Image 1 (cartoon, rainbow, N blue to C red):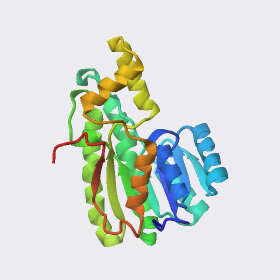
Image 2 (cartoon, rainbow, N blue to C red; image 1 turned 30 degrees about the vertical axis):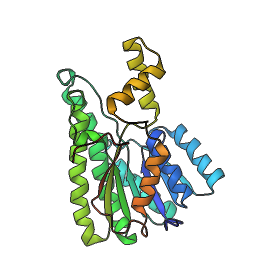
Image 3 (cartoon, helix red, strand yellow; image 1 turned 45 degrees about the vertical axis):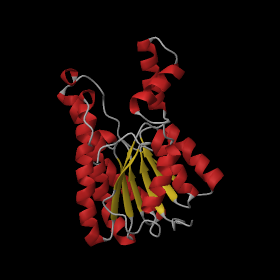
Image 4 (cartoon, rainbow, N blue to C red; image 1 turned 60 degrees about the vertical axis):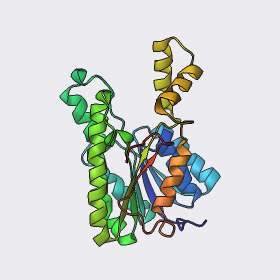
Length: 262
């Protein structure tokens, strides 16, 4: 299926590894030129080289800390200068601290909101005029914690809940402006972050990694963990101006069936 993405320009935040890297590769495979945003310049350069040499698409590296208020607008300016257009924005950056609530400080909460929430808000604001001009699309990569609360995930859950509301609000604005805004809540995805959590679990329980993986899957009630490219493929569908033209304000739990409530 031709998704109609060839020649379009996409910004992907948190692109240096994991889900963001997977999204960038899938968009490039569909013919997008990509702007790769994260703090790790070296990792971004490696990904950019792969996209240019293997997939034949343009790739712009933007090493930026989106917690800084001026950074999102600077990214948008650089991308528009390089590509002359912005059709797609994928807000993926932001990992929040997991900890006993009573051990968390105000600074921990402020840091969690600074990147994942305010970085998203500022980048959306800065990119909106360009997206409006192209009748473009936004996909926010959020998380299941936005509607399934956990005591050890009070920062992430609060940020994610705010972003779910923000997605719906901007999709409402998008009806008037011709910008579609949707979101994906990934389940447990095969990333270095997941592998790290499994290693911690294995050490704490005195088991090997394979057993930790097995126990984790059983606890979640799913057959397997997801893959970054599966999130990327879902993003490609949602931003397609042909296949998903009617998708606006949708929030998809892409989690292998982990979420069972309505």
